[in-house]
Each structure stands twice: as C-alpha cells, then as structure tokens.
Length: 147
Image (tube, rainbow, N blue to C red; front, top):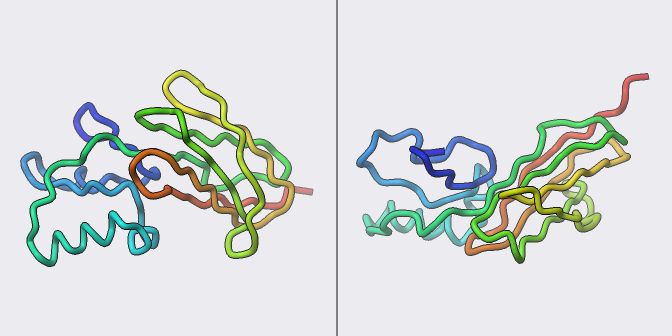
C-alpha cells in the first residue's frame, strides 16, 4: 500500500514504500528471484542503467497472498487481487519437482480466493497470472501434522 492505493504484488514491501513522496516508483509486482525472469525486471534494469524515464506505474498489478506455511492435509486460503478479476488463473506445483494442477478460484468481494489443502509435506509454489504483468508467484511450506 502506498498512500491510499494498493499496487498489488506478492506480499513484499512495495518498492515505492521505501522512498519519500516525490521520488520515482518501481512498477514491479515481482520479488527477489522472479525479478530477473520477468520482462518488467529487464525493462526496469535498462531504465536504471540508461537513465531512461519510464513514468509512473500504469495501473495496479496483480496481487497474491499465501501463508508462509500450512499443515499437510489442512486447508489454507489463497487470495488474489487484481484490477479486473476476469481472466485470472492460479496453479500450484511442488517446487522444482512437477506441476500439480489448477487452483479453483471464487469471487469474494474485490478479490478471488481459494481454499487449498495439500496432503504431502514439501515446498510448493503458487502462481497467479492475468492482467498486464508477468505471473506473480509465492511459496508455501507444507509441514507434516503433529503426531
């Protein structure tokens, strides 16, 4: 959130939040490693290196909220925010292993949500795509239930 506007993203602190008003803002909804793999990240690097003026962000991006961890077999909630909720897709995979499937989404006021229960412990990547930005992804650690 910057001022009264939610710029979306993946739950990390938005670049512009670290700058006082009047300074340039990054238009990137990505975080960490995903920056290097997104077309927006490459354009932003060119902007910085070549001192190009990109202008302000061109509207809100897609936002993804997933918990940091969940218990195997127990449901957890995924929330996706986007300017237009049509055309948004969500998938999950065991990170670095294999794609598993689509996440069914339901409209909930101004966002899309899903309740997902993953039965096997491991690290899973949830990916949401749609709108004008590259896909936004975040990881959730699925831990074994207490015995």
